[in-house]
Image (tube, rainbow, N blue to C red; front, side):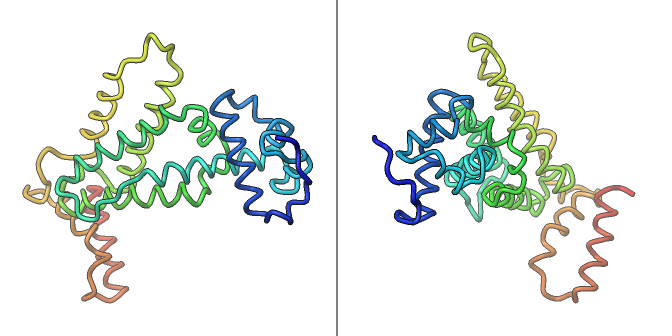
Length: 238
């Protein structure tokens, strides 16, 4: 496609940005990160190279926008069941989905987690909130073995580590059993085999009550905060 006039106001700034990001994503998937140069992306998008700098500032800005595009694409694949029949199976399915996205989009996934803007991405934060919701279901049912934030970190870290480890291996050493073992290790670390609220111990019951606190309306804000502090002490054992 021959280059068109670089005046991005004619087509609309957001439309132009999206056009460039899609062109960059195609180059990244086909030829790898080194192929994503401002000149190559501009040519693929049918623009003049200076338009890239007006839209993204520089190449780093373009890569950050491409990473955000990746997080948004991943977020679009997530299925949220507000009332899962089996919260542990729901967690397994979510972990599998996250890993499969990384294996299907290796170059994009690697870029998503190598750009400094990843942790501040709006789509990344939205995805983490979905994960926190899944963990809260586990906590409310008494299935959670560890603190909620630690569980979120474990689930995210094992999924991310599984993908990056898989991608680092030669193709002849990639064994799907690795992914299954990592997933089940995560499940064993995060959840209990039986709901903890049926046990005599206080920690599991405290976690379940802690997860349900945001839904209660009887206590005042000060009372809720005090109860939360007590429950946190019970769950930590200190």
